[in-house]
Length: 188
Length: 238
Image (tube, one colour):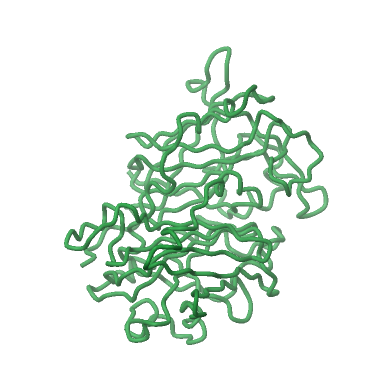
């Protein structure tokens, strides 16, 4: 029996007490020896920060395995303490931040590997449905060049928006919802 | 092959979901992306997902009328339903999070400036896990309508926000549940942003006498269907 999906609606401006009552932005402690920080800012079409967004991430562990029953590659280690899920609100300046580890490569559509990446959902007032994007890593030039998803984006400017910037002590991944330098967003 | 199936799903979702740009809802004007979306092929990155999301759910998290020392004011209601995938199969043990205004139409949120009273006995946030049949159940009070600044004399119809994970990154959904027969539907650009009238109906709960408990609370039923297997058969990830 097939069922028709329920439509999406905006998260609105008043979600904080329900969805951000616990801090979920540290997938690992910042003291973890392999910890990396991913910082970013969400901007609107006029370049103004979006102070009422929520950013969620989903990723594999360092070995490239997802903590989920559908990933049954038992040859790869699974760390029960690493869920792979994070959630951060944006602050007054539109900023968000995650402490996590760099994921390993994961299988792609035709048996080839995908470059290490983090799945991202963006919710905000004024977004009637979530936006989906991906964070790729700047130190993976070769893997990025061969990545089937990155390669499918013909517009080089747009493709480049998916690769985080190395700022020394952190990676920076800004999200531009609209306008010049708009981030690449996906649909399924 | 994955690409083709991805395209099918994209069309399916577009029909059902509101467009990003819906100018009557003013906040979309500067936040809707203008460049075409990129089709994402189906891989393990999105057929997996944070199924349990937020860890342990406390026993009383589903009952918004028992989170304080006293009972909140307003019309006590039970909201229940099933979370299903596109095949109509139950989505089990999956996190459901809700938030809403109080009976007077006021959120506890510090940015809500509507001059309606706060209720010291109502925070308006709840969560629960679906059971083995995909069923969830909340006890709360019926939220009030409230004004917003989108246009002159703008009011949101009464609604409860729902956040769902489902079984995969793909199935993540945030939506709003409305109440039957609300006169504000035709004036609300957020509700109207869903272009298909049949799809709009799927955001409206139904009054349910079976769920209603005598001498205690009215019952509303709201089933939620997430993106699922029917539209997107599993593929070999290897």
